[in-house]
Length: 286
Image 1 (cartoon, one colour):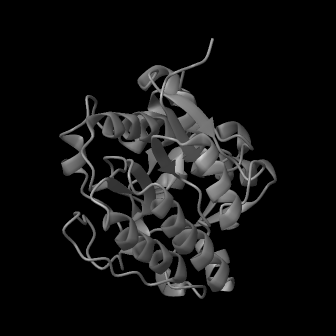
Image 2 (cartoon, rainbow, N blue to C red):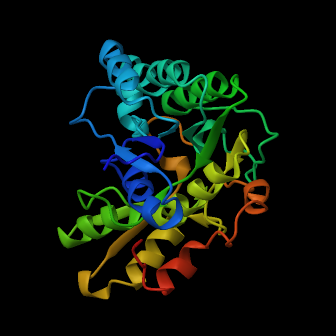
């Protein structure tokens, strides 16, 4: 018997956020069939194949999570960052011009000079990654059917066990590394399962536009690390506090905390604080 449910494409399903969104569909959007796309399926930057696959599947929703998301790598390879983050997004949004599309962007579209940014604040990126995302946002939002969701650093279980902020730190401590963390760089970390639930609720609400989706707690990088370390004394976690004033790499934004009240009003559950999530035992999605 053929499955007649509408099809949703989820790109970046081999990563942290995309994998959680794909798995969470059974609980939060059972009326949708899912094609969870990874790099093994096809290259999103090879546009003839993207078009062939799209025209074969004819999805009725696209959730676009795939990205080149390491700011250091983006700075080293700006052309590749632009191709993946801007051009591939633009091409996909063109194919999906007549259906809803949700594009994942980042809090790093802001310069971090004041924090608590709302959707009304103008992007002001300070690095290649942020610029590529800000440019993609503008292209996506030109279509009134399409949505951009800005998020922040994300925690939780990833397919390869190394993509969540908590996973990455635990891996380093397990190797005996001392992790250097900024005491004066602020974000609003969020568990991937909360992101997934919120995105499905947003998709089903059919309210396109620009939204902020992060955890409800503003924490420094140091506070994030200390919170994770407190849960894993068996790893003998070592942390070295640092300051952005001593940073010698690509430009970084000091405070990209986001105001999520616009999206929170649409959701059936409160966006969690990071330490609240850790204290709950970091549950995994169904």
